[in-house]
Length: 332
Image (cartoon, rainbow, N blue to C red; front, side, top):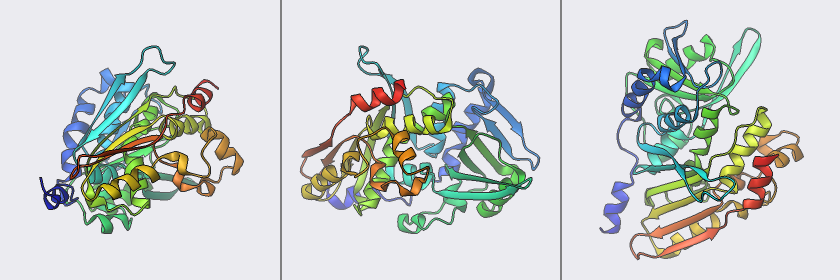
């Protein structure tokens, strides 16, 4: 395969993420009782799928949330690695459309804020609805916008979305409220833990974008991260899920372009390149007094990477897995 053909295959002017995800959403609704999720109709006719707020949810619900986040274009699996390890279970993700699935759908880039009974309801939206309604400039760079008459949004939230948010999202996506599905779970839930760990590949794609690596050169990719135990508090839960990727995540990207560019990406992509690397995320968060944006954005990347240059067949590695920090984070 020549370089131009590989680049063409990596383009983001691909399938409709909102249409592709429908079969995954329909499967969750069909299996709701087995998955221990709560499917209901909201006051504006929207479909709500609670995977961990009032519902019990579970690992399988989180696995399917991960596939919904990917716009139906990827697979999320729960796997076993070294059974002698303290943390032998991994969340693995693969997609043949890494740019579209991860950046065009999964990335939590839609900042949403509405007033609800005198209080502000603020969340970051992810999932395929972003490609319809989010004002993110990222979509201009991707050269992609979806066209669909139904939309699906995923929220990392500890309560159901209020009517004002439903109305806002539906209007932005140019769909009726009864054509909108919102899937949600808190970070501290089993489902929330899995769907966040399933962002290991997305985090790598976002870091590559931050490093100005040409996205059209990323042809394929897969990633895996240890499944962290849930924590009851938001900060602890957020810390563990971030640590799973920052100190335990492993990614392989298959890229077009030169071997030199592939090697540079492998050198720069790992989390250890960040000035904030070296402590559990909850400790880093505490040190900046809860100001998420004060944390070096280069920290948000997998621990270890392999980048394969498809033209030359060479592979380059960078970073390492830090089991000591993982154990400290997961056990405390």
